[in-house]
Image (tube, rainbow, N blue to C red; front, side, top):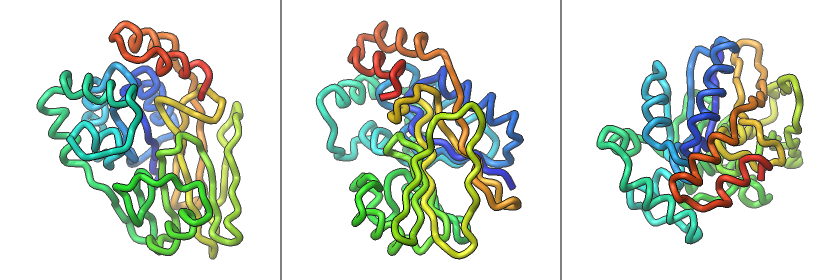
Length: 244
């Protein structure tokens, strides 16, 4: 089975459409979205509708999704501005979609979550050694897929070895370890923060036992223009071109 794993769409319809077009070319059998469908961008309803149209798409709860539902989340003033804007515009069906999202899902020895598996609603980033260690210890998963940081990375349990996935014209292929445990961060669809403005996602091939990291160009100028036209913070439009 080939599973397309993506995260942090942040209401960026142009990025999501481009990613799903690319996923179709990769012949994925399943879709898993690791959360933060909304926030920052100007098309929350359209992005949710597109996800709902995907057959069997599993979508988990991110911190921006939770904030829209009224869960207390630490965010800066500009991020909360977008949350309030989103609440006022979400359709009832879109709101129900967010309400149905789960925090964590496990398939055998494979674990999926937005931020971390042991305190999912504390929204800790899996970047510090202590958080990495706790994530491995508490999940007991052979493979853990996460988002939240907006940066694609591979973290290996042995010696906490991290590999940041750099820009490439071609997919980067990473083998799944036979013995060691691994964390794979798929990066962000709608707001990459690794200096590459292209949307990021991965495909997990459980037969070949590999992870394919993909980057997809999209019309970030159009997406940014929608943010400005909606009266949302300018920085959220400008950063799309920079990948910051």
